[in-house]
Length: 177
Image (cartoon, rainbow, N blue to C red):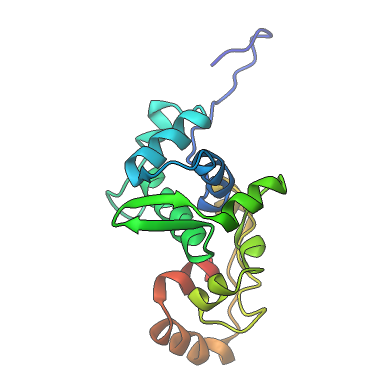
């Protein structure tokens, strides 16, 4: 794309990280109406003015839609912290706790924010501080691939293998990266 100064600029199309989706999702649910996961995804996509191209991106590991995957994680995290209730399968509504959170006008909601809720910590099955390595919501995919690297002390490899096999692997993996 060319700007007014004839400078070439590349428009980056990206799907927001799941932690970035949590606040817009809670705001969408703030109306107090039951919504299906599909309705929630559509409402958040409209709220964030996402392009069709961004909504069609897939995860690099397979054929799963990136936005659907990340919305699924955002829904799960809010539900596990009891900010959302699930009256029926695939149907959600904001809880009283979720309404209280919105009244506080948070700037962002991420896993660190959710740690203040006991039910969320039970979901993680971890003592306080074990997941300090969660990637902050403001880190983009590009920053993760260009700036971050994982350094594992060889003496900790056995401990890491045991944790991955004994804990909920997806949750631990998300915190690992």
